[in-house]
Structure formats: structure tokens, C-alpha cells
Image (cartoon, rainbow, N blue to C red):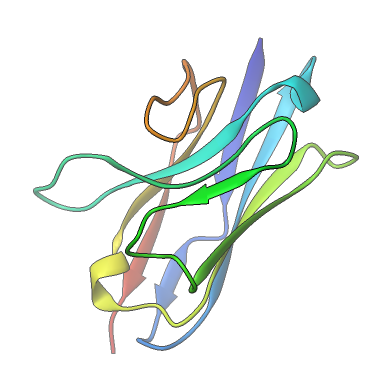
Length: 118
């Protein structure tokens, strides 16, 4: 069992940066792959980035080269560094544990809103 809490969302101008955090509590955090997913208004949820329990990463084509996923096992936290953001990045961002890049797990946080606007 793992509980997830996202933070770090907000309003950012195009071209700016933001870092999202996904803090986990519970046992066996290191055994879970953690992914970031987003849902934009009127669109389906889509995967953004994923890190496996071994530390391998995978990104959506739309964010490759701009976003970076990382983790701090001691803090039980996974981060999503978002650089060079564009308005199309506006969405509610969620983290999920226990799944893969394309198939998220059963554990979800409550989400954090990211709005890219001038």
C-alpha cells in the first residue's frame, strides 16, 4: 500500500519552469515504478514520464528534451522538472505507482494543476 501526494503546480509563463513533486508514504516505495500523467481540459489522460524501480526512464514524445523525471529514495519522492513549458502543457498532473508508462498503477495522488499562460 502506498499513498501519494502531488505538489508544486501553479501558474507559469510560456518558456518558464516548474518542478512537481510526488511524495509517497507507506512501505516498499523503492519497489514501485512511478509515473506522471496529465489530463488537459476536454482530453483524455495521457502518460508524461515514468521511472521504473530500477531507475530507467521513459517520456512522451511531446515532453522529451523538456521534462525530466527523477527520484529521491531517501525522501520517497519523485520529481518532474518541467522546462520550456508551452500552453499545451496546461493540465492536471497526477502521479501513479505500481504501473508502467502506458499502463498506470492502482495508486494515485489527488493531482496538481499546472497552467501555462502569459
